[in-house]
Length: 582
Image (cartoon, rainbow, N blue to C red):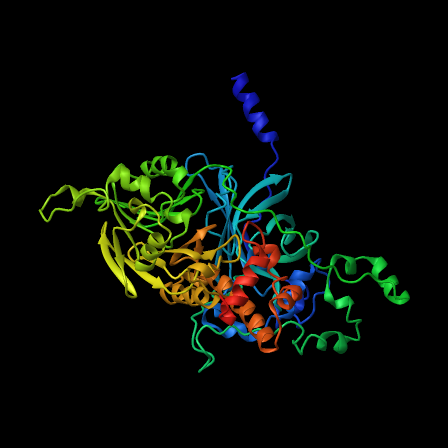
């Protein structure tokens, strides 16, 4: 009895956790432009941006939001609380222990559901998909709920084109004071911020249901006759609207351009004396490479029958089922043993099909080892007899141009595709779903293929999509910038997003993390904008050296300029492909 009494006494002495559950309404006087019509173009006040973010925002054309793929885009978690919204918060508890597993939020803007996990689970792999709300874990620090969020999509710092990258992370603090809830966010973005961006908002507990919980969106054709694949943007230095904001409010133009140096009291004094520092520019140093492969091969379920095998030199797509295993790309030759061990974690059935999305060694290097292990038409005599041994081999599929490039390079026949296609596409039915392969001409190479698993709704894109760098344009093997853009637009034709531009069709890039349509749109937009800049320079008679010196990519270099495929290499290949000077 004494022990029970002491236990009850200790439990009674434990402080009760603050509840933040309820319906909360925004205070409209805070961040009024953000909650209403949106901030003015060129208003970068109070944001510690670098020059890359500034140029990207200067090039942004608001009519881009009329593109179908952008009409339903969601504000990411670091920005969504600034807009017009209601927030409903509740606890999810374990039914047996009644311990809080997670704190849930429903945010009326774009009907977003957010989960803050409190059960100690780790954050996902760097190859996992990113979402608008990101992946959040939390803990109570006294009466303050502290939250850490990763895996965020590309979003806004301000919705006038000022970007936040998909490498941003956020720490938040939710603090309740009676019927008010203070939200403090600390955003770090190694791509576009020079120091953390700290913001606060205050919410008031609703006394009755505030309504307005739905924000449905269905995209439509807003601009008729616009060329397919066009992306509205302003060329560098050509945006006519950037001076309207400082002239309207009588502000020094330099001061509204943003940057950490403009946020401190000393800056105002410097303006008076003419000694205010110039806005910060982006770093000229390349960012550290992402997805470095240091943790070994990872296997991630995508959806349906499809998995991603990452860190194999290049991404490998796996489809597994009762009929066997299908691989898209073979990885590097030296990694075959590790790749097969990873495949066995998914299925113990033999590999029946191997698709090569291009001729590159990180996609075809493992062909000989897989052919030797499972047999192929190049190692087993094909007999026109039912049940012959050749029917139990792996069939290696690729576009005919891959075979042509392999033979021209005098690669051993065991590495060759055993089955090629010449036209636009090839069909296969395997493991209960249609597998559709499409040729993408003159893109990364002239033999690129994308593979669509129609039942699982997953596309394996090969090297026309790379979330870690600019796309490699292999001029010697028939590649071109316009072909890459055309290939990305073809993916967008196939992909169908789920709720508000998130999920639905998933896309596996040649390198980098799992994507959905929105991520492909951002990559397509970037390449289309850079193409437009290079074409304008060519029209004005600029040489390759002049284009390189102009640094037309500097707003995207902190995000895509790392790795062995350098910005200079990309720009040279892009320029030569657009001038047809191969």
